[in-house]
Amino acid sequence: MNVLLLSIGAKKTLVEAFKSSPSVSRVITTDCSPYAAGLYASDSHYIVPLMHSPEYIPTLVNLCKKENVSVLVPLNEEELFVIAENREIFESLNILINLSSLDVISLCKDKLEFYKVLSDAGIPCVPTIKASDFKPESPVFFYPLMAKPQKGAASMGNIVISSTDDIKKIPENMMGNYILQPFIDGIEYGVDLYTDFLSGEIIQIFIKEKISMRNGETEKSRSVKNDEIVSLVKKTVEILKPKGVSDLDILYEDGTYYLLEMNPRFGGGYSHAFLSGMDYPAFLANNATGIANTPCIGEYEAGTVALKYTSSVLLNEDSLLRDLH
Image 1: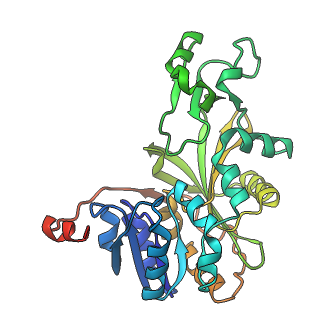
Image 2: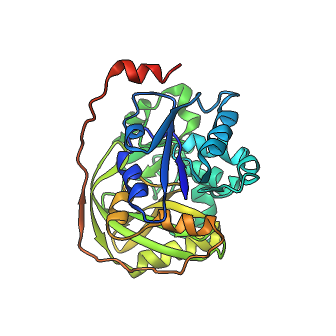
């Protein structure tokens, strides 16, 4: 089973997870930059055009044919849309794409619409409004607040609002693109979820308490088991019906668990789940060969701690730059 990971960037640990899975034969990676460190951990790698280039999809199709790819894994949030819009091209080559429907991807990208749909369905979510609609006298919103781009990612552009005057920190021309949420200073959990492509069943829910974060990704975490979070995740899946791998963020404060967001892709903290025996690459491989996975929810050890560390790879720059041509 050959797997193609797109826009790999610095995700070396994800490459290693796929390479360590007994179900995966070869791991191929792509990126638009030869300086993406994750490229050099894979079995083979390719420098490709930018994702919005008209040559991008044809390039990927040729790579899939050349490398006999069975599973395609987009990792960049914007790229999810590009691949979703061209899903039929890859599926005609009998390639399984780790991708939910375009409707799910679009909803998860839009923090305000995500809140409206899930809260209307009875899911406790972090209250969310457009920044332009904020009224200081609102009993739900009290300082501090978090201002975020409505369709942002990786915590980029997030601003802490501590007073009415701080609203001015949001650029006036961007006010319509920002949302506001209460700043919940509680415990944050990350959930690595796999929903079967064939049966639609939840196969695994791995829960980790986030000890520290960096650039929107989990840097240190502790595995936990929590029935209330499992119930919250099950209700969310029942409403959204995602497929394959997803990553959810949940906040806990004053006795309530709040769903913050869901990313329909591999999360930055998946390595903790993999090291704990959660072999999502094997789940993808099974689905790609027409085999439905058997649910194994909660079959991991609580109390393990995962710590990320940085490392470097030394390469000859001339050989890297030759990949550009």
